[in-house]
Length: 253
Image (cartoon, rainbow, N blue to C red; front, side, top):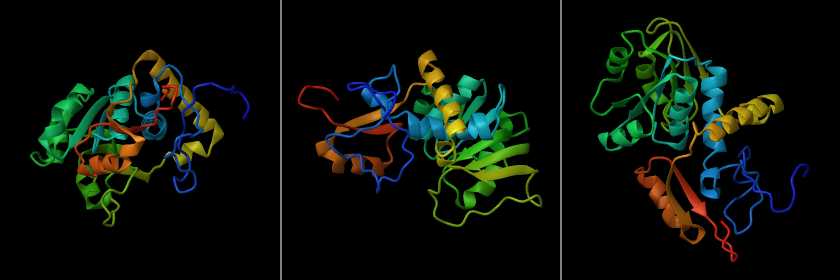
């Protein structure tokens, strides 16, 4: 591989199937961003490139734009909060229960909507002086997108980047909602395009260098405790990234 020497720290843009390249191992070769420790480096590329593609590139979010980030306690959601702040936008985060509200405020959300307790469209309108958000960034999909669409400003964007809800996802239409653009998104749109990937990496590295971006690591596990790590992930109590750590005989991670 050109441009690398033995001993260089590396991190990975995970643009591959884990079934093709497994990374649960004592020795794994992947590229790493500079100026962050190995644990934080593990939380960079998937989260920040996913957020970059939707907010900075596809959604063309600008300073002052209110942005809705649903399921915001995920690593991508937290990266999107930081990215919105970096751009000068106004991140509005959602969480189902109140237990994670303060953590999201501490992470930089301007506002947090607890959807088990508050009506989402009404609360969005309250926070945006009745206008709605410029962009909604959603990993859940399913019928809930119609509720989200009610809070999007005319001419805004709904970007769905996951499918946590396995039910069919309806397409919001002009009969029920203001005119808006809807799209799906995955980071593979960037990682398979050399020029777009170059811009994304430069943007993320700039944010890391300035301190605007700081991966949120909820908890680390040793590789020997991988089953416990998966159980913890399934509990859904985490805020941020779960990282599995391999410590070598020489003490390096």
